[in-house]
Image (cartoon, one colour):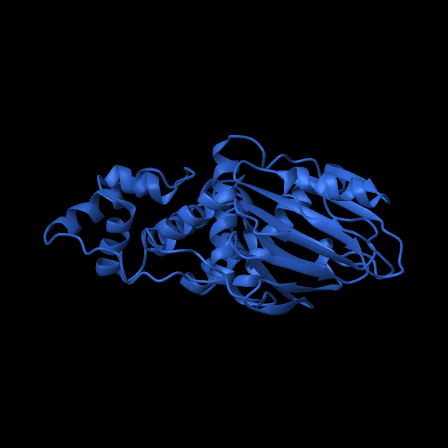
Length: 337
């Protein structure tokens, strides 16, 4: 993960160093400080290495990005997390996770999500450095219902480790890396109630869901006959008028006068995909129009971010898949014409 790696001889220069929560060699202090932001837990040193606990933390509204190491080999037993999900990805070392029902290993490019109701205990290796995303339970469940049609009474559960070295997993880690690197440069992307911060948190939640699990959409309701086309037209008109806004699916459903689940069902029936995918394609088409008719100051980055694409690598990937060339190639060709 490039800038998110730590030194080979120990956790040197941990990411988010400008957002330090604490650094201590005292076991009781480490336990108490972590408990303040996570939950009560048992913490024991197992190996002979000295405890060198360090915790950096970036707080948002519904989630926080954390980098934590204990230096020594440790056993951590929080029991059920209850109020939050916890994504874990070892940047260095590895961890053994036991959830009561099963045990598994993470590290070497794999990560996993702890469910709020699992009876959790873990052993972290010496010099293990974990990148973690702590997410409010209701916020992640709401995102799963809105984006993937998770039935309203169904539980959102994650099961075991997932490789994150390619596909959606790699894209999700890339987005995390972008947020962390911008934070280390002094940019405040999270922690404010801005539209950008709100949309970025939502994107992180969806990225995590895409990289880990896709809840079933089987129970999504079918729209009434004759109602779906009008609903879809209203939604599409709203999206076209607000391509540069930080839209969420709830905003689109409200403008169309329907529920999120009904909107998803209507778009799947008409387009074979969800409304956010259609919105992305509309934004890509607008990007092509702007890059094909550039002014003297037109820049790919400005066009992308102005249309809600904050992960430039992902933007370029979708653009090439749709148009057969990169955004830069479109701009250069238009400037030469």
